[in-house]
Structure formats: C-alpha cells, structure tokens
Image (cartoon, rainbow, N blue to C red):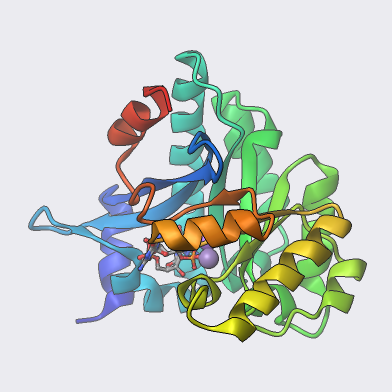
Length: 255
Ligand code: G
Ligand code: G
Ligand code: NA
Ligand code: MN
C-alpha cells in the first residue's frame, strides 16, 4: 500500500488526530506537559501509530499538511483544558524537515494558537537532531531562534542519536533537551551510557536548559535518572499516549 496516499486520504477525511503522552516530574509523578503524537484512524476504525505511517512524513507536503491538522487540534484541545481549569505548561508538537521549507512555520503556529485563543508559551516544538542539523544553510536553527523570540519553547528531540554537538548548542540554544530512549534503555546495565546521560544532564543544566528523559519503562531507570539529577521524564512507566478524552482524565486526577 502507498502510505502517502493513505495519509492524504486520512487528512481529507479528518482521520488524523493527536494522542497525548504525559511528561511527568520524576520525583512526584505530577504531569508537567504532554507530547502530541499523530495517530491515524484507519477506514476500518483501527488507530494506527505514527510508526506505521511516518515514512510518509518524508514527503514534505504530507509533513506540512499533517502539522497544520495537528496544530489546529492541539490548540483546540489546549483551549478546552485551560477552560476546564487544568494547569498545563506545554504541549509538544513534532515537526520535521518539510515544515521548515516554506518559511511560514512561525506564522502557522501563531495563527493556529490565536484562532484557539491559546498563549504561545503553551507550545513546545519538538525538532530532532537530524532535522535541526539538516540543510547546510542554517535555515532550521534560524527558524528556531525566531520561534523562541516569539515565546514558544523548542525541544531538541532524540538527543544523542544524531550529530548536534555541544558546541552547536552554545550557538543555537533550545529550551529543552530530550534524552533519547536508547540511552535510557541502557541505564544501569551499561556504565558508559550512565556516564553519557550524567554528562548531558550536567552540561544542559549549566546552559540553562531543561532535560526530559524519554522512554522510561522501569522503576530502576527512573531511580537512576533522579539520582543523576534529571527532573522530568516520559515513558510507559507513567503513561502511554492516550486520546484527548483520556488525557483529560489523567490531567484531572490528583497525583
Ligand atoms: O508515536 P510513535 O512512536 O508511533 O511515533 C513514531 C515517530 O513518529 C516518532 O519519531 C515521532 O516523533 C513521529 N511523530 C509522531 N507524531 C508526529 C507528528 O505529528 N508529526 C511528525 N512530523 N512526526 C510525528
Ligand atoms: O521521536 P519521538 O521521541 O517523538 O518518538 C516518541 C515515540 O516513542 C512515540 O511513538 C511514543 O509512542 C514512543 N514511546 C513513548 N514512551 C515509550 C516507552 O516507554 N517505550 C517505548 N518503547 N516507546 C515509547
Ligand atoms: Na518527539
Ligand atoms: Mn524523541
């Protein structure tokens, strides 16, 4: 099957929707934010994960249109949650190369959030290392700088898997570093990984950035992360990505 075609049809039928995974404080378990993850309702009613269709996001047009749909839905959900008195710092939205090509990402985010009446500081843009470093013209870091000046937060996603050097972080700072799951997986069993995670936490802290550990699955990983000074994490240990309706329940439940 042709994934680009499937996602195209799903976009036209409003069958692309955000699910949300909580980001929690590792000491209390309190939810500080959410990451929006695209899901596709298939014609037979199943919910497909992004892993099943993300090859289609290599098509710049598909990536661009998915982001438009996600921005509108995330901003509307945020408005509902804020109206319900739910305190939520940010919702992360994943963007990729195709989102940076037309030079209008900033305007698209601003207008989606203005339409919903949601302040921009609730938006967290998640950009992975490969996208951040891709394109020799420096287009992405410049766009990121402009977005941060507008008051959005930016996270460098999947940190440690790509080529973003620490030198680069000094030139193009971001608000949040998300430590890739592959490092979290090896905590405890693999000494070098522990040393690397410790170094990432120490250096980013000194640069004034926050750290989120991704893919936390065990109590032991969470305990090691806390001992290394990591304050936030996300992963199946706390919650899987859930629908907007289920997210309300998680957000409304006292910790
Ligand atoms: O949720 P899941 O594990 O299936 O996600 C698989 C991959 O798809 C991850 O790399 C994730 O960042 C990416 N992804 C999920 N939702 C979106 C989205 O809305 N836009 C983009 N560009 N990527 C997404
Ligand atoms: O590339 P990005 O970091 O945005 O991808 C996040 C992906 O990781 C999502 O598809 C989400 O479903 C998945 N994920 C989140 N927490 C866990 C976890 O604890 N274990 C595993 N295996 N996957 C996770
Ligand atoms: Na992400
Ligand atoms: Mn990630």
